Length: 381
Image (tube, rainbow, N blue to C red; front, side):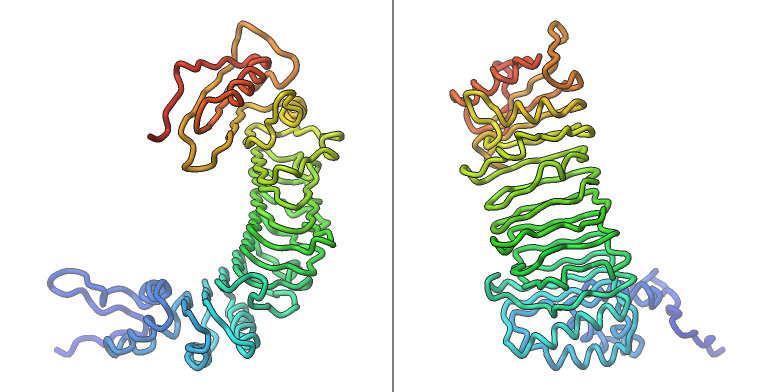
């Protein structure tokens, strides 16, 4: 008896030896193809008749190429043959480009948005001073949720994300923002700006309407930045270079990390009118905020954090360079009204216990926290 004809998109029956990749439905295979480089996905068309057109509806389109000149014709044919099939992810990474590549890449980006892409990642490893330039036009999408831009030059209107009505996550890494006055969004929850360059003669505002941010990572290298959003709900981590961020904009954070790299820049103006961190429960500071003999910056922040529960201090070391951890805990025998009576846990991470570390421990001890130097934890040899 002739076998029943298989319907469109229906997987072939399992073999006698059990399920095979051929037994998977078309939709799942198109999802799997989306994890491959686009050229590898296209090459699967030679595997069998069933695979001839599967790549045209792959749910993601990823292209990694050193030189854009090598993929111009490929991308134009690829986008034409996809005929507007919906995309979940569009990802394009490249090392080098020519002046004529700009209009093409901008077209590819707009095409991906027309295909309802939910995740868009565009990156160049070119030096940020001469990076690839996106058109100075707002991105428009009702579907885009995640946008990652790396090594790209952004103009003012490009950073107006009000037309991206579903955008929740924005990552801008090693980008040049020479004339950006405002980064605007009403839906953004996760903001990351790392090692970017701003115009040092112009202030950049992060939206003049609440963004409802849950997480913000700001690692800035040049320029003046003003945080006007005061609705940070979860984490705000900042590395301060030649920039100024108003502490008032951080006052609603629950978990706050202040990591300053510059040894000359201080929040003196902000600290004179230090806001109350009414929701702050977890605080991370580096040695920049813990300067002997009076520890003014640390003292000021602690006194304005009425519900602080946990304090972590990184002294003269970062990340994997930490060698020692000194734990402190609340001393029930004494009561200090100077700072939060919720503060129960203090951690100090450092490379070595020197005079500076001892001075800091003595200062924190005045706030009803006890340290046991004999129980120092060794983090690495």
